[in-house]
Image: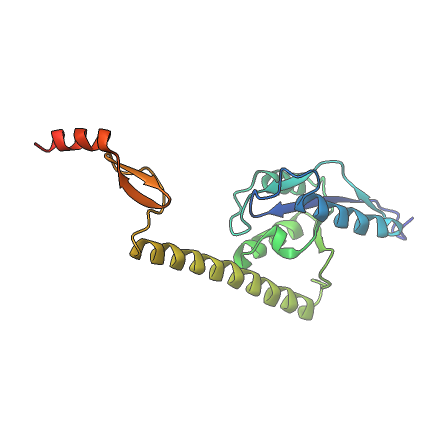
Length: 194
C-alpha cells in the first residue's frame, strides 16, 4: 500500500498514425498497451491501479488533437476520473509542442499527471521540463520533415506527369498513375464542345 494511502487511477492512451497492421490479432496498439500495463503493475506498491476504459486511436496522426479516444480521455481527466495518463512514448500523446503544453496545462488544472513508460523525465523540475521540451521539439521536427518529404514526392510525381489521385476529368481514367483516354466518355466530351 502506498505511504499516502491513496489509489492512483491510471488510464492508458495508445495511438498509431496509420491503419497499416491494425487488422492483425496483435498490433502496435496492443504492444503499447502491454508495455503500459506492465509499467502500471510495477507501480502497484505506489497505489497505481489500471482503469478498465481503453483509449486507443488507430490510424490517427499525432499532429492533430482531433482524435475520438483522446477526447474521451481528456473528458475523463476533466471529470477527475483519471489521476495518471500512461503512454508508451510521449509522441503517442502528441507530436506538437504547442498541443503538449495545452495538455500538460489541462492535466495540471485537474490534478492529473502523465508518464511515458519508455522515456524517463521528471516534469516537476526545470531540467525535466527542458528535457521534455527538447524531446517534443524533435518529435514535431520529425513530423514536419515527413510532411515535407511527402509534399516533395507529390510535386515531383506531378512534374513527371503522374496522376496523383482524385476523380479524373470526364473522358479520362486514372490507370497506373497515368491519365488514359476513356473513348466512351471522350466521345461525350467531344460532343459537348462541338
